[in-house]
Length: 511
Image 1 (spheres, one colour):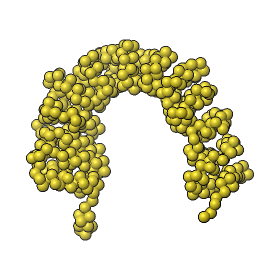
Image 2 (tube, one colour):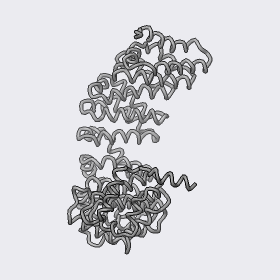
Image 3 (cartoon, one colour):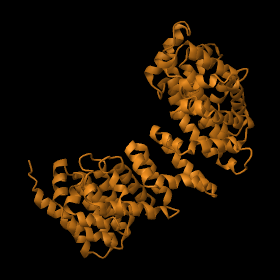
Image 4 (cartoon, helix red, strand yellow):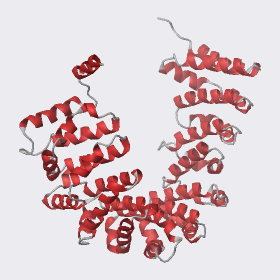
């Protein structure tokens, strides 16, 4: 057995990198780096770890300031591999000054290399306190949120979001120079919403996060953008506030600040102000997310939102129809939302007829959105199914049109993957409910269609069809005959992508 001298091996790798200083030809440099990676890839874990730990990175860092972008990119690839072997924070312990300096390197690959290393620290529960000790480092990372390179900016945002989740470090972010750094970046229109995204994330994470974000004044600045004359700015602000509203603390805060009531008023006055129409998609998404997470609050406190939602769908205004369909799906996504809409009398059966019209005759993208909404409207988890809710979903399904299952089956036979899948997903929802299984069992040719693997070309459709057959294989007794149940179970056993070899051979012979 050959004994490997790790110190000598480490020296060889170190010297290979340093040899780049002596070379002027870019191709020669790239060959050295390619050879380095190839040889390093043959090492076992123990050897790789000792070499990564034994490298003198301070001798390598000057190479990262060269003008050869391709060479820098390859060096960054190698350093990424070496750094990943080290413990989070180990590199920063050895080279705190160099690490902080390289965050501002001219090359985006270098900036990203160091930020990813700091992300490893941020993700480590016992190492994240490095950031407490070095506010200068935090300021450098916050400044990178304004980076021209989006990957660099997003990595910096992820680090600060993670730091903001920690209650012991949280308040440091909103003090002194760090607070002023945030404020300065907010003055840049191209960067401000990156900062708002970080602030909203922190505010959504905990009550402490919400309090310090509110105290900083940044949340109020975001809310004030809803009154800006620029509709695009209003929509962007609404998008950010939507993320805040899905947390209970965030929703309460927005209610206290009267943000919700003002947005409800805008929805109620949509016919009076033409510009409000431009905001409707964002408003629908905002209230849709609230409905998904806090349906009781929406339906009991702000019924005008639901009535406006129905009016939008009834009007078939294609510019705002898609978010309205999404929102209705969110409202109905759980049993409580379904019962709340049932209490509105004929409103739901009426809107379901409109949905059927959209599915039959609108442009494809809206037909898909309508099918996705319908799937949420009808969906009931197995553990929540009882006679009452199943009676309601059956009633709603029947309200669609004279032959609702025929309409869905026709969609499932479409030759285009996106709409075909949307139809199959509706079929999957009803296949998990007893009444749906009965409908499927009596629909001519539908069982044969579901069991025929040869007519399904799209992977995503095969997945959904498998889900349908799996539901049917668990149907109650006497819905399907014994032979059909056996076929369902065999289909499930074979998996979604089974290919019958005999069928394949027969097809090849025919060709």
